[in-house]
Image (cartoon, rainbow, N blue to C red; front, side, top):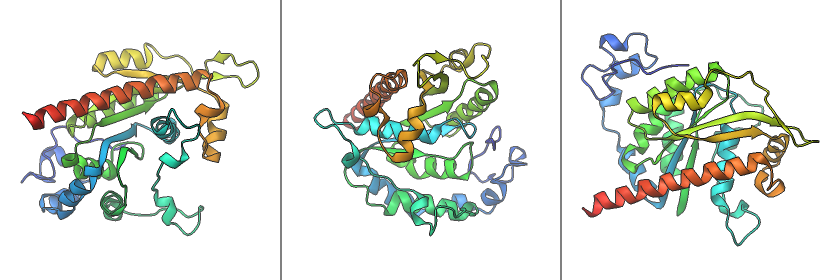
Length: 286
């Protein structure tokens, strides 16, 4: 996992790419070229475009395979639910680089500049319309894509980031780095979600632990770093099946412990976003 160097001077600094802390950073050459200090007209364009989006949430993970994309999909379903309707598909919109490929088997072999250009195009050129939530499912780690998203959305007011982990120590170690990244780029942290915290048997419906326990786990880590633990989501086999079909897991399994955990987490995310919005409105009015 690529990590933001300690005491990073920032892309806009005169020392960008030239300081001692820049040595070994994957973005050193780009920063030293001065491209980061060049005014980007897209930032103002994106700021204007994002005025129709009330809340922006980034979903991050320290490592791959922790269920970040699955969580993003179910977060979107949960937020899009309307108490007066049973199905939520009409309230959801999705944009993915996968839509631009000629085949689902194609590999995306792009260097940093092209990936950054794609992010810029998604935020600036896609007709998002009047929406309540924009959920950005990011790649694992901390790389060019994360820096670009934060930079382009900085003036459009990001509500914050939800960080996904699993109970294993190796995942928790990477989450610590992810939290460090968020603080360095001044990205608010909504909280941490411990995914796959148990396994729900599809027959007996009992929950068992599938990962070896760690000392303290996510709860102790969050306490140590003063970050909220939004909740734990057990693994229900039906989750993957519903994701493959593009259906809401909440509708098919409303009483599943995983559904109940998701709903509790989503409620806490909504409360955070509403509080964040109120604070911004108070600052503007004052």
